[in-house]
Image 1: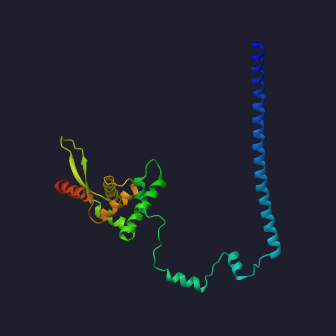
Image 2 (image 1 turned 60 degrees about the vertical axis):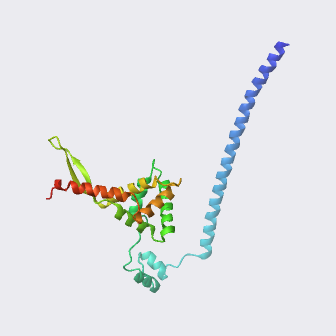
Image 3 (image 1 turned 45 degrees about the vertical axis):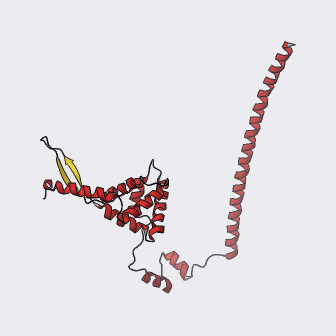
Length: 237
């Protein structure tokens, strides 16, 4: 009796293996047939589109190359009409707007982490939108004015000398360095706010700095005082 039970188990296991192989083979064949049918459908749609274009070209005939418009295309010349000339004259002297502002791009790169540029752009866009809603002014111009107000004019740099005492010399900052230092202070101030959303905190801190209430102004004043104390080490050429 035990022998018969063991033989039945062995036979069921041996039968299950080929059944699995057959089912997997059928699955692969079914997937291949689906791929083939999709490729056939794409090919058929492409051929139908070519046939439609051919029929349209035959029905409309050869384009008239003697027309003034076609002559301009053939000779690679362009002659604007009166409406286009009037629009051109109305736009004379107006600056061409940039696709991406350099200051906004710089601030976006500063809040970016782990190379997630799209996430940083979304945060910056939402923060500027909050500035727009509360102040009803151009948020990019508000950001530029805020960075110009908050950015320090000078910083201290330490230079090694051959004697025991090092020299601490005030060094002027360019516009990009001033914007970077000011925006870092804005980010530090936004971390102390209550909102869980970083975009909301950043927008509120930009508004606070624009109104002159940010804590970054105290840091700016301290840097300027330290630069005034070490002004004797400035070497004028």
